[in-house]
Amino acid sequence: MFSLNQHPTGRHYLQIPGPSPVPDRILRAISLPTIDHRGPEFGALGRKLLADMQKIFQTRHPVMIYPASGTGAWEAALVNTLSAGDQVLMYETGHFASLWNKLALRLGLQTEFVGLPGIEGWRRGVQAELIAQRLRADTGHAIRAVCVVHNETSTGVTSDIAAVRRAIDDVGHPALLLVDSISGLASADYRHDEWGVDVTISGSQKGLMLPPGISFNALSPKAIAASARASLPKSFWAWDEMIEMNQSGYFPYTPSTNLLYGLSEACDMLLEQGLPAVFARHQRWAAGVRAGVQAWGLELQCQDASVHSPVLTGVVTPPGLDADVLRKLIHSRFDCSLGTGLGKVKGRMFRIGHLGDSNDLTLIATLAACEMGLKLSGIALQSSGVHAAMDYFSDHPTQA
Ligand SMILES: *Cc1c(COP(=O)(O)O)cnc(C)c1O
Image (cartoon, rainbow, N blue to C red):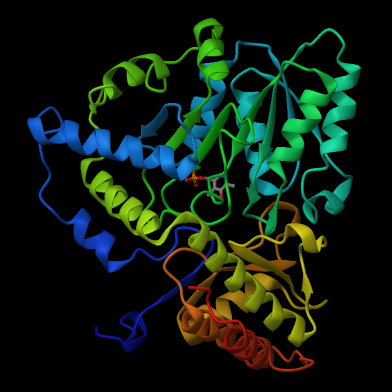
């Protein structure tokens, strides 16, 4: 039976912080015929992509491309650098940091999960001093790696990765620095080499504007050296064969050929625009969306103005309003998807994604959907967030 509800007109507003909307240009690239991944053209595609991804990560060192979701690349970073029973210091910024910690435990690593107590740690970025304190006490250098999330997608908080590097170096500790920038890369400023990161993990479906299905490890020479000694079992994730085959632009097993066409297009789009412009565009959107939330009189999940995420905004719902009930209402009435509260903040907040293929008007429309949903839920708003965002965007033209 035909139902208009199941076939809404216009475009769905996919405003979750990943998967993000996929631009037509990328969808068209993905639709091209699949080629032989051992054939003559593929090597040129592979070499181009690997060079482009080095630019995106801002690194001169190898980048691994896996046909897997981000979770696979989390695992790859750990199994290539560590051995069973190794001690790892992980920092709790939110739900994604917790999931990575759980994954590490399942691999047989001994993790120590540090952070500010309770919900407080989910409202601020990484406190580099807490990491320094713990490393200072580790005089025998038993801790092999420090793991942090660059852009915590569950809360809308970004962390200062250079400060974490400085904390490790100031103590003179040899631990590797592993960073999840699955949702930060290609939206928030990220510099793998300059910030001294040993492994950066990322994924396709956030700032890179691709469908889910590919993920990355960017390496450092120190990480590659560690991989020669690391003894956790690995085969599919092993860097050694990948690095060797990648020299000529090929992969040890069948890569996601069509997603790689999309990745090539995404890199062209990002590099044509230039990374500084991409980062500025996201900061501006985030500021406009925050102006909207503040005009409503609602609280932001992130409590430190210096680390608001440029990728997404976490909005705390007023007492008595379950954020998931609000999200369902907005989805059913206005065909707009918003991010759910995860883990400790389930029901307490929702997330507005403002990344990738967005523009001022998609964000105005998204805020309008939220504003209508809040009003329908009986919330007395202080003022119109939509108007505040319109003012913000009109008063702050994009820098050419
Ligand atoms: C999306 C995301 C992940 C998980 O990636 P999957 O592709 O779902 O496996 C991990 N960490 C962060 C910060 C993310 O945003």
